[in-house]
Amino acid sequence: MKASMPIKAALICGLSLALTACGGSDETPATAADPTVHELMILSIDPLADDVWAVGNAALDDQAQFDASKITDEQWEALATAARELQQSSAQMGALDPVVVTHAGVTIADEGEVGGSDSEHVQGNIDANLELFRDLSNSLADHMGEIAAGAQARDAAKVGPLINQLDGVCESCHLEFWYPAQKEMLKHLGEEAQRDAGML
Figure (spheres, rainbow, N blue to C red):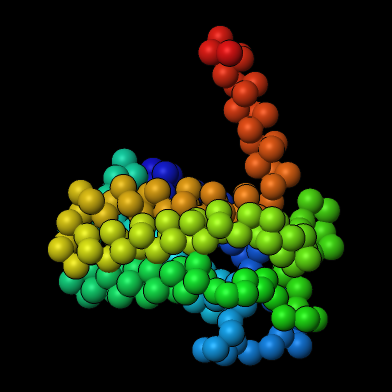
């Protein structure tokens, strides 16, 4: 059963779509000079991550392990290209100055929904810890650089785990700035599990 990577990708892609999809028709188009975090996510980072996961999912065997024999030369090249482009976009996001989540009048997909977030709160979260936002953006860039190098070298032993870890790299930023309440909930659940196991 192909469970491990597809489920992880589905979970984090759902989170990514929730934070990035545009909620209106009045969105200001992205520009090379001053893209917002929202624009970088929906126009580059999210679709490129989907491309990376698509290759990774296609390479899973029946034990949900990365099987290089399932990847063609064209797929290796596509993976390397997507990873390099995602690396560049992530680095660009980390270098934004100022960091603006959305243009005026643009909403994120779950804005107004129960348990959702809105661009104003996300902006406040980032402004309160800008250094961490830059660090996490650059961590994603570094991670994608490793995937790109591994794909170029056809190093399945390196690439498989890196793709599998990608959802966690993304989630670390999503939970910090988009869904901090969920971060606290997960922390409490983890503590309860440790107590139940006698670890606390």
